[in-house]
Length: 301
Image (tube, rainbow, N blue to C red; front, side):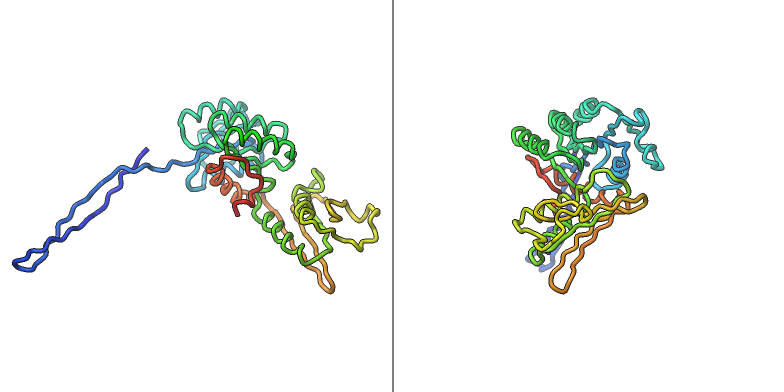
């Protein structure tokens, strides 16, 4: 696809006899390639996060929803499932290969966003790669063994994949602030709250504990209650996590540091899945340039 680009030029000619200038104008046109939108396939489109992604991609500049895959609401228009005013005329299908095959015929840049589950991620990425498409994977419970296998596959296939433990930019900023604070404090504990009891400690708490432990420091050396269960679960090098679960609570993570005479606390709350959408759009725009696997959206902040 190309666009017509026109420019207006003006040339002045000098008359040596009467020292008067005359202007002559012309327009030149040239055909330049027009950058097409990134086509996005949402795998797990009927989930809450999938529906939010459909709306975000539809409104985003430079990209469009090209396919919706899920095992629920099969055959229904994804726009109607998302409660949008106008249907997108894109039915939800439960066959990823069929969707990718039909879109691949257009030869346009396509990104597959995977919101499925850890057991299917590897095969989904392989299928997307077979059709020349990049993948963004947001599956919080994905195992590091799967990430390692995907990394080896991407290296061999020279394909780009972004695996994001979190798409929340606020969560990433919290993790980065915790790393900075850890150089100045030797006592730290994590307190989190959730509305339900699945996956505790959360992926965020585990990631923060891992980041701090990787720095090589031992925390809470003077804690006398090592074996008391009420003191929370120990992660990494002495970092305790306390998880509070009550219906109606927002998803919240607070990291408390302490030193002589002071306490430093960093807190991040999530009140709506829409907070993940800026990170998702960033991931889609960045992954199209990758030729290997990148783990963590923070690499692009």
